[in-house]
Amino acid sequence: MIVTLALRVLQLLFGAVVLALSIVLIKGYGPAMAGATLGKAPEEPLMDYGAFCGAAGILIAAIGIAATFFEKLQGIVMLALDGLASFFLFAGAVAYAAKVGAGSCTDETYKGYLVKHFDLFRPSIYKEYHTTDVDKRAGLIEDDIHGRCREFQANTAFIWFMFACFVGTFALGFLAKSGRRGGAMV
Image (tube, rainbow, N blue to C red; front, side, top):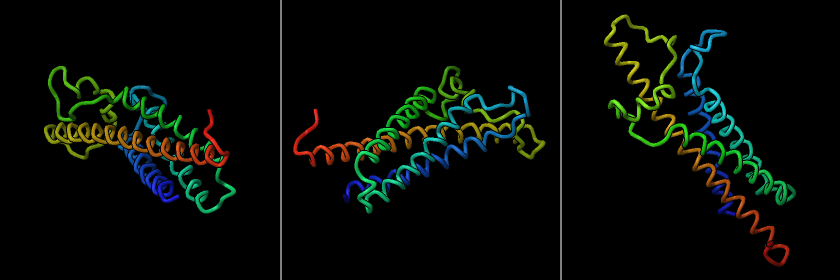
């Protein structure tokens, strides 16, 4: 019960981090021109799915914490919710990992990490930086790209962490359910 509760608290924390990072990525992209595809975030569905994973993780973790104290919520309901969460988080983690990849957010060489993933990390062309100095604006855009790169990488990692926690609670729930029946399920 203590291990399950600890995993539920971690799920709640990781879910909050994933939701917050996803919202920062969505909001930090900048404004899109209504009806135009040029101003839209190139990976908006990926960022939206990250927000869904964070919110769903928080909700299921909260239900799981309540189930720890109310025995009627335990059992097949939590097993199903943990399995469902694990499935959706695995899909999100793989999608983020496939799109973001691995690399240094400061690698600006000709065929470097930032160049390969520029469309993913770039801010909107309509984003305001409140300066008329071209060099200062270029520096702010570069800082924005580096920051968005780090945020995407952190979001990828935290979705994987949350997935691992949900797999853990799923396994513990499965073992507890099979233990009550007098033997392992095959």
